[in-house]
Image 1: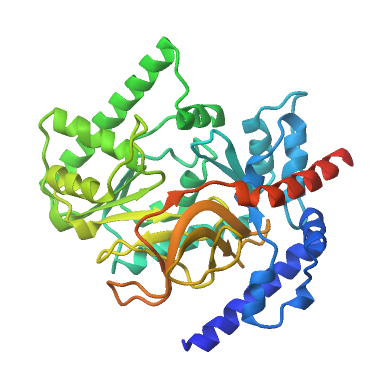
Image 2: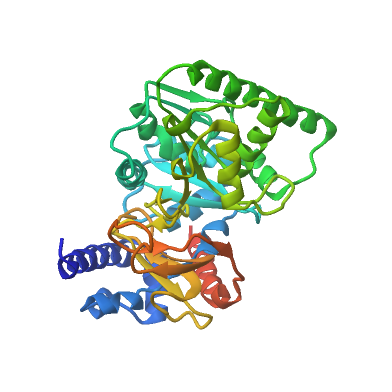
Length: 410
């Protein structure tokens, strides 16, 4: 597709979605009024950067109990289903489960801050996210491998975004297996992410779960080691690094070669808080499992996106989906274009159920084309890191006040 035609389609899609949120979402409408921007102001592709961006911290600033339910309703764009929340003091999980029982797909992710990012998706928006993950992965491979082993909880056991994405994708495999097969509450996920010191009993329980998980993973690898079947593994980097430690501790080595593919996603810090080198990690996978460097992929996708960026085999650059408009901002929150380091932001036209016009706390560099492979479209540099949030504080405070006003009117 010619560039001008692709940009025209992107402009049309983003303007349509912006108009939808401006019209149907009261909190975002008020935010746009404060910023002085309306859908009529968007005339050309260049005007899209006028769209008011929401700091990602806003999706972490939710209250508890029944006020949490009202907060979800305030973020949501469109008509809510009838939601029944039982009990006078519902937990975080109780509230999310009630919305999902009514036909929604509210999910959360837990970052290093210990605050859960909560995104209220309708099923249409969730299907877009699942489609993006599946299609992007298959873009790199002619066919799905035969079997899969994941170190991420089953979607039936948790409302983690990473788990819910898998629901459709795992249908591609003959033997989709979960090494991590127990329920994960939001409280457990948050505490694990911030490294809260567990009690002695909790520590023993966690160690036992890890031991069981690694036994399951090892036996699964042994099952297919002597076959010609292809396998695919999915894990958080820190967890898989611990699995490699366990295999090395037992003197286990495999030689799957090109029959094996590893997909990672999430933060690149070990369980003791130290950074994990991408290159060293891939070398260890080669040494322990035999997967070549080109068969190790990482993924980058914020919970607020209906898109997942996966690294290419050739250069390990993060390839962006064509419908997403990426933006890099300097310290004054002004767009700096290609080749410069800055704050990652994006306009997501497929986020129908919440305003997907987000500025993140991630530092990136946007390149117009991958320096190594010939796949079309922009990419993010191999290094993605966290940065401060001082520049976004004013916008975050304004939005928090708007949401608080909406809660008081309930």
